[in-house]
Length: 405
Image (cartoon, rainbow, N blue to C red; front, side):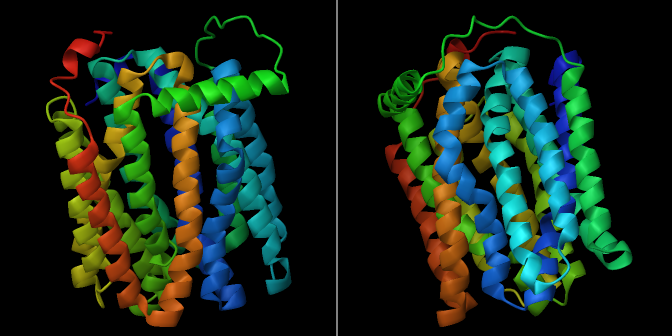
């Protein structure tokens, strides 16, 4: 799983991503908990998640086109610096009347992430190739996610209680600056000569990316299935912090649950690395989604950490696998020059589903109860598993399609 770390540029990218993610995850519990403290409103808390995903929904496909046209290294560097600036705006929030600044800052931060994510997704195969090192790189990315989930959420809750909200904002600012420094140290790679970026050209590039997805059955169904699953995940994620605060005992308990998901990602990363090159994407994706649906049902009907923590760990393990399949398969089976556009469409689909879930989840929970929402969301997640089993094509093997870099 550690093979990709032999590549210097990947080490820098991985380290920078780890630091910036840690800074962001320190706010995962802190921002919703702070909004809940200021407003006392579940809807206001859920809107923090919606604010992050709305720009991705609106701008995602365009960002993918730009990430395929521009120097991806420069895109990542510039967006890290931009996000450091906009996060600083949250320092002024200290009353219910200023909570809108948090929404605006989260939206602006997300706008920067819109360009960063497809650029990073497409840049990784350029650094490590599409062979076993790509599996290693994606497994390490999942490991990073797990580690950050493990330490970021509870540490953020502790720092929030001990030092207050502004300290966490300063740490997040510093993390983006550290990531920018790491990216600046990577090797400059030759890029194709830029052509004029006109509206007509952007439209043509976007249409080409959409045609690529529509004409590639595996990618098309991965997009549909991941979007359906994210609808369920988004509806429950919007209530994860309120679940911890209201049902499990407080912000620290909420942080422990998020950490449990992180532990699962840590455990799932090497397992995913072992399976992703050996098991058909259809089978691995279907079983991981079905197991995640069962984990949702356990977690969101729990009334104590004795049930919630094992359920959270299970969700992390299977979530690591369900993340890896739609991440790795298009990287291996599509041309690199369209990966930015394709990944941005994936992110936009996930954003739409998350946005709907972030609004609908709290509304359904308030109207019909958390148990009703949990059953509905778990059913949608299980349906996505059935779709994967029924609709994804079977590949004889991935290995002949993979280069050996």
